[in-house]
Amino acid sequence: MNRPGPADPAARAPKATSLRRRLLLLSIVVLALSLGIVGVALNSAFLRSAEADIAQQMETWSYLVLGATEVGREA
Image 1: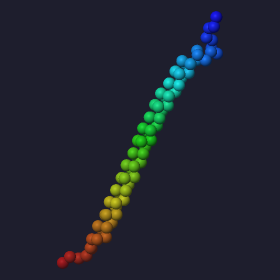
Image 2 (image 1 turned 90 degrees about the vertical axis):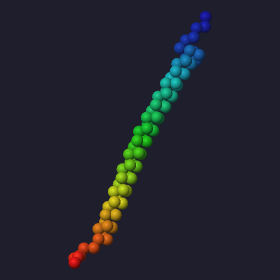
Image 3 (image 1 turned 180 degrees about the horizontal axis):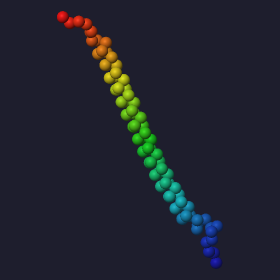
Image 4 (image 1 turned 45 degrees about the horizontal axis):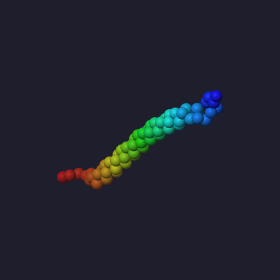
């Protein structure tokens, strides 16, 4: 009688395939979540940078307007 035992490679093949599938699925899920989090972080950093740039430009323009105004007595 030749019964498959725990040391038989044919008996372990379905378990190994199942483990590989689960590992692959988990890897895909972790990769997707990681890419999503990185995307959100990059988007947030870009928006903060763009807002800071616009604020700097507005400050520059306000100083230019203040510098161009003439203060004096009008008759």
